Length: 119
Image (cartoon, rainbow, N blue to C red; front, top):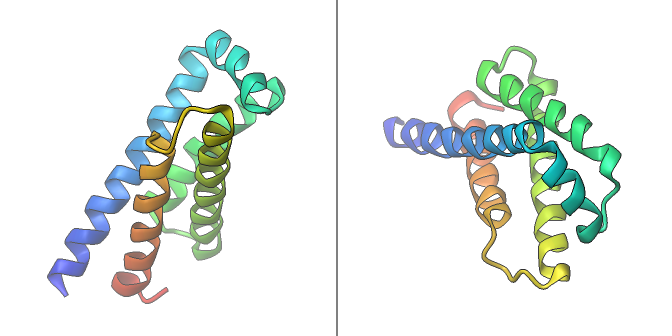
């Protein structure tokens, strides 16, 4: 169905944009991000692997070459966003974070991935 494909591509585009932006922030503003991670309860050594995993996840979702990698990318994005949201809420930043949008668009993208590609 054409509307399913439109919903899939909009949600997937937003998902990939959010996680690419996040990885870019981790790389380009490493000092600031690594200073902020401990405040949220995460170790600073996690910044570089997360940036790499986010970029690899975007590639896996956009190429859809290996189904298991695509599924792992969706799972990784979902858990990353859920943990980020929980950390921000725990820190007192409130609910309206980019991570909440990331949770929503990741779920919509994955649901419509199944509808459009039969996964």
